[in-house]
Image (tube, rainbow, N blue to C red; front, side):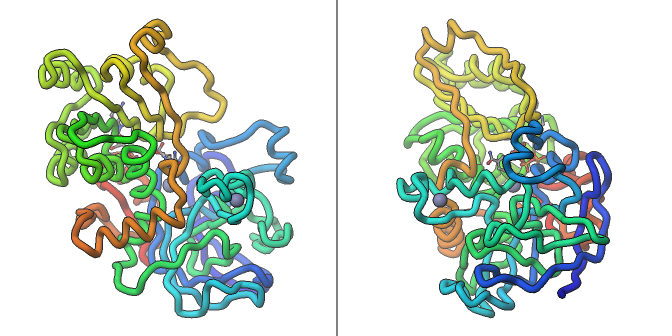
Length: 382
Ligand SMILES: NC(=O)c1ccc[n+]([C@@H]2O[C@H](COP(=O)([O-])OP(=O)(O)OC[C@H]3O[C@@H](n4cnc5c(N)ncnc54)[C@H](O)[C@@H]3O)[C@@H](O)[C@H]2O)c1
Ligand SMILES: [Zn+2]
Ligand SMILES: [Zn+2]
């Protein structure tokens, strides 16, 4: 049996606490990884606070009574320690990042090039090891879930090989960690799901880690005007330093600004990356976009929220689209190495995205800083 330290949420709304976790020896399809950095994505907080959740019938289907206790973290980068006998594509010493939607490579979705929709994604909420269906992680005799089938807030990670992507030796590991979810998701929200075309006008609503990814995706796709919306000056000013052409403190002020900038035609795309998506935000987002425009919803909404305020007349009569996106609608196995290649080539300005490093014991401080708007992305350094 392996013992390691991990940041765990024992129950809904309880803080992260560092615990000694017991892990049974990795199975033939598992890999152990010495973590180097883990990113503080908002989604882990959503799990802790219950925005990410599921009705009882879904919990029953995935074979769990509760989503807690859970090891937090799904963004991360580390170095492979050991691989199981059946793992052929990784070896000790390889550098890897974690992915919160595993990819099996042969389900309908993977086979059609959409690994972000892999059927294994159903297991990502909670549950035993995907590799053999056994519970391998324990806290004081209790079975432990791992956020996204990963749980990257840990000194030593043991996960299914399908939750890992190999990266090259020469990218900084903190950069790799934040690209593994936040940047990849945001980038794909603009460049892939939003299908930003050269010369278009994009509004990015919420300038955290994911919003910065959306900004970078819009820039790479050739957007001409990019309006960064965030109530916190540091956030939108940082986005403007990175490449947003304008800033606004709310969607309402963005509407005035975009109207002026476009002589009333409005934006082609609005990407919604606030901390939490609320139904009423759609009422503000739809008027931001032009006829034929699209709104991309990236942020997580409370799982049981079903009300959205939308002018259905405007939606149909103005030929608008409201699109959801998971992982930026791009196969993480393709997207993450590509983005890291772009970074290496100096074409993806990611320096400055990691604002602060924390020890695992300070993970709650990291999230307080996120809430207060003091960081673009915090990371745990192991
Ligand atoms: N769809 C996916 O696959 C996916 C993947 C990763 C993260 N997410 C979600 O994306 C969202 C963003 O994640 P993050 O880690 O960047 O969060 P974050 O908290 O770091 O950033 C959110 C930003 O939104 C700003 N904000 C809040 N309300 C706003 C409003 N009304 N208008 C404009 N800005 C507002 C905040 O000031 C903050 O800067 C979260 O909901 C997260 O769970 C979704
Ligand atoms: Zn699959
Ligand atoms: Zn994430």
